[in-house]
Image 1: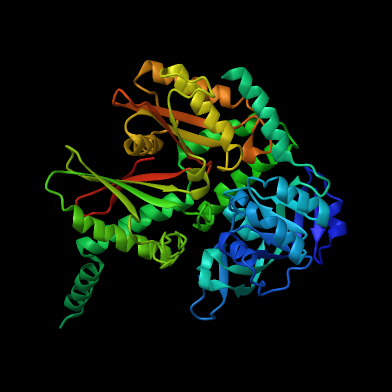
Image 2: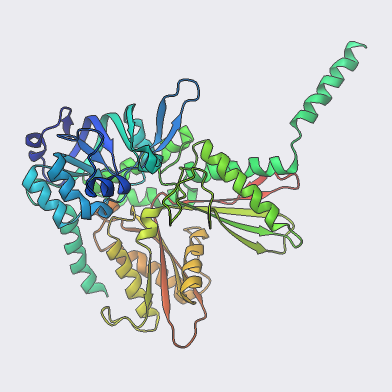
Length: 189
Length: 314
């Protein structure tokens, strides 16, 4: 088990290889479909994403009626491939060093990871409770006009479990598994 | 007034206060159905997941993923919070006796869904497809999805499936013959396209997954009947012997693909496959596949005459 601790850097993430199991401690920003499209359309993100990790996630959130504070009650990853048209540019233009999601991403994102120093970290899809447990505080909420699941949530996490499935050296576990399973597929159909 | 009489009056008041209106009682029962569906994986699914875990090699990413899945199932139940943040399309199947007021029941379902959303059992998950607006209530055109069936029994039975978007996106429909796959209009052709759909899904549908399949029907009915197969218990037996054989064969073959949990590679790709058929017109031969994620959220209740939950169906 490896660790990635805040403040994150491109150098630190370049150390990782496909298949590494990593625990992240520090800060995450959620961002999914609406956020990526909005940034890609030319709008500056409301927070500085340099050396930050973006998490493809639309959490279940509840506001405490007394304190007015937000609590995340479920927070698993959403399918990342939908951000494929945008992710490369977001990595390039805003200096993100990690993308957490599920299902993996395509060649364009893989190229950006290599070129700019970024990794794709796969969280276990559907494991919303295990992952929400690792969130220790909600530190900010931005662009909530997109609806709460689509907003940017600034979160602090401790020992957030992920697997590196696309590294900064051009390797993708998703590509490997797809190619291997395709070979098997040919023999069974 | 003697003490005894006063005590009796208080007791009577308590009973009166406890007795809910039929509408409120129905809403309570439906909210409980939503809560359990969203937070607890049914036992038949858990059993298959537990058995699959044993097949994965220790210290691999596949066994790591299965371990997190198991922890998540336990934690969601203890905390009574959604297994997955994507609480999906909310799909009700209501089986009722003759003379039942469907529209009244629809209203109660809608109220329950709104309340369950406020309680955090459902995410604010319903988006207007034209404006992008999310009202935060899970109500809107087509939401929740409600299907009524009149049955012979005297009781009301309500089944609920929460179908996440990730696994819905990898669900598929094929039109046979499919020349690229060499799939003709027979069960061998069906076998080929179903396995192809699992390969195409890779880890994107939050595998290990479970399939509902329909052979035939028009495009709309075919997709609906495929989804309805998800109501079957994973350990049941298809009464159609050839389909029963095909179901098993598909699961075995898909688990040889090496896609594994989350697409990390591994031995568990598919938990189950359930197949039904519907008549088609001579020109069409559709095969529809509804992919369900490992967080298989499906539950059902039978209501008693007081509209309380009498029995859980899974």
